Structure formats: structure tokens, C-alpha cells
Length: 311
Image 1 (cartoon, one colour):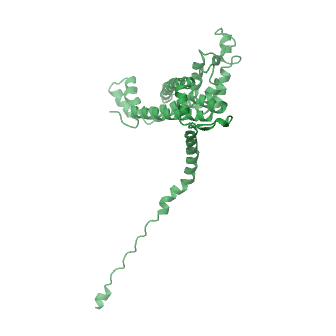
Image 2 (cartoon, rainbow, N blue to C red):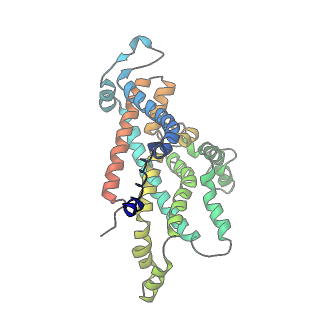
Image 3 (cartoon, rainbow, N blue to C red):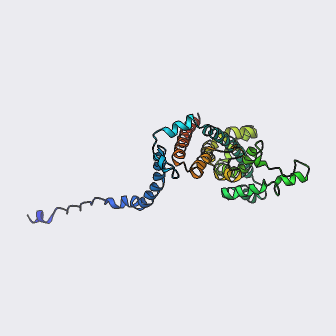
């Protein structure tokens, strides 16, 4: 009995306390205030635009305000030729700008990716226009295109063109002039993203290609471009959305003129809401632009196979 009493059972291990849920929820609780604020700042304007798109809302004509249903959308697609003109110009603007910016941005990225004396200074000069705000960029190019003190004055001094010529007021030159101004600021965006992706390409691939006798063009086509695929797709998509919504540069340079030649859909929306105070119709046009961008983005990502390896 004494031996049995001496061999006592070991004490039962303490029960594990259930891990408190609070530490796991703490990160979400900490970011909740910022998330709610962001949701409010994003969701409220979007919902307001959708709501007012179904209304006749003009503060200067309150007697006409009220529920309109889909009348604003019907008017845009059937009775408003300006809508189709601005939508067509927006597509042309995006296609030309994004295509040229990608081309020149890729070329600049390939150049500054090489090793040469003063490469750091060259990269800084290439990237510096991207650090300039859109309004300041517009002001710079307004001065450059000034008929009295700008480029045309110096060209006239050299016998090229005539004095008093303004490229921004001529329907035959306003589009190329606006394109060049936006290229100056947009090209560095592509150069920055593409150069960042170029840094991750293994040099062993190029060395192996050289051993196999591949030319520079074949190395670029079979090594560089496939590696840059996702970066190019993402950058072109982002830039296309930004260029479609471009208002500040065109508004400052041309105001949508001359004769509406450079009026994009967002600029038309801004004029309809701010100048004409027709917020209901402007909201409908904004909704249409949102649907167009969403649809085109989904189709582009699907067709480009973003994030998937090429077979």
C-alpha cells in the first residue's frame, strides 16, 4: 500500500487556453478606420454618380429637376453628336499617346540600361519630366508654343514658317502639338517601369544566347520582350486609363479647341457639369465612360493573358 501511495499519478497537464481572438483581429481593427474612410471617399462619389445619372439635376433650373430614368443615356446615344465626336477623339488620343509613349519609353529604358559614362545623370534626366505636375507641364508647353516668344518665333527667325503662327489654334497642327507635349511627360513613366523590370533579367541568358550565335535582335525578341510582357501589359493599361481621363493638359493647352478638335469625353463631361451645370447628364456620361473603361480593361487583360506564361 505504501509503495502504491508513493507511486502517485503525475499531475494532469494544464489545459491549453484557447488563443484569444483579439490578437488575430488586432491588425484588422487597426486598419479599420483608414479602410472605412477610404471606402467612404470612394464609394460615396461612385454611388452619387450612378444616382444622379438617373436624374435631371441642374441647380440653375430647379423646376426641371426630378427622376429621369434612362433618358440621359438615351439622349447621349441618340441625340448628342458631340458625345460620339468626343468618344472618337478619346479613342484616337489614347491609341496614339499610349503607342508612342510605349515605343519611346522602351527605347529609352534599353538605352539607360546599358553601361556608359554618366549613366546616373542620363537616368535622372530621362525620369525628371515624370516628377513634374500636369499643370506645370501644361504651363511649360503653353510658353513653348506661344506665337510671340515660343518655338514658332525662333523658327520664323530662321525662315521656317511665318511670324504669329500658333500651332495650338490651327486645326491641322493642334493634335500633333498636344501629342508632343504629353509625350514629354508620359514617356518616362514607361521608361521607369520597363527599366525596373530589365534589371531583373539574368545576364546568363544573354551570355548563353551569344554562345549559341543569337543576334542582338533575336536576344531582344526571344529574351527581353517575353520577360517584359507583364510589365508592358500593366503599364499600357494604366496609361490608357490615365490618358482617357486626361483633362488638365488638354484643358490648359487648348481648352478643347479649336472648334472642339481636342475635346475628349472627360473634358466634355467637365464642361457639361462645371460650365453648363447639367450634373445629371454629366453623371450619365461619366457612367458610360466608366463602363467603357471597365469593359475594355477586362477584354484587354483577357486577350493579353496577363499573368500567364506564354506557351
